[in-house]
Length: 102
Image (cartoon, rainbow, N blue to C red):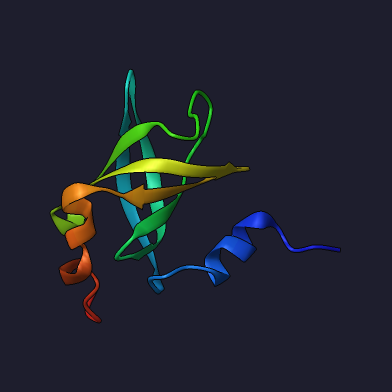
C-alpha cells in the first residue's frame, strides 16, 4: 500500500517542520474557524480544521493569538481534517517562532 500523499509531501519539504499543538483561528473569507496548528516551519504549516468550504489555492490567515503570531498563506493541500498551508510574504519570516521554548 502506498503512503498517504501528505506523508510524501512532508518528506520532500525544503524547510524542516517541528511538531506543535497551537490553538489558532483560520481566517478564510467568508468565515473564521477554530483550528490547531499541528506542525510549523519556515515555509508553512499543517493544521487540523473542519475543511468544509475550503479549497486548494485559497488565501488564508492563521492567527495564533497565544504566541502573538499571524501568518498569511495559501492552502496547498486538503486531506481529511488536515490542511497544508504554504506561507507568503511576512509568513516567511516565521523562523523566530520556532524557538525550543515553544
